[in-house]
Length: 243
Ligand code: ADP
Image (cartoon, rainbow, N blue to C red; front, side, top):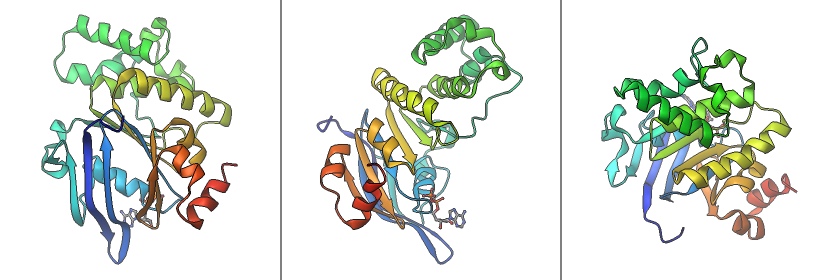
């Protein structure tokens, strides 16, 4: 993993809202195929950072490079990224298949190929083929999460951004989905960039973790490095919540 080239590079990325510095000079390289999680308490700047990476917000200063191209200079429909939100934004009156195929339909992919890809994605997301024709209102919360993820994969992005997708789900199901997401990541070969306020969640899934505090990225490392060698008291106290 460490020899892989970086797909995303942040140089001095800063975001100010009036007098408030939400993200403060963040430098980071995310490697291709990595599961990278930004973790930090509420208000530490995670969402703002992720929104900038996805091109939804412009940095006040600093650069975000996606394969050596400035993210904000790429037209929205040419960015090889996709955001998976906590609020799933599925089409409620359409079938699972139609939801998953939506990005393909927009690109003019023929019906047969759309269906084949949707069935492939159902398999990847561990949903039975029979769900293809089912209305999304007949799916449970966890199943809808998987449908939303299958649709994100249908865009065939190089990077998937996750904005706390599991935070509204009950503990037991969350534990199952965390493990599945880790496996799906491995199987898909995509780069995952995930934010959460739960260090426990980050520890389970990630190749590397970046800890944020007051807009600053205070430590970056593997779960093991952060667990064994927290850089300062803030990180060790944050770690304490996991034990
Ligand atoms: P987190 O995702 O870690 O909870 P956020 O990125 O949402 O943190 O917020 C970081 C800081 O920036 C907070 O103090 C928040 O109130 C502020 N903030 C976020 N978005 C805006 C905005 N659009 N306008 C003004 N302040 C904002």
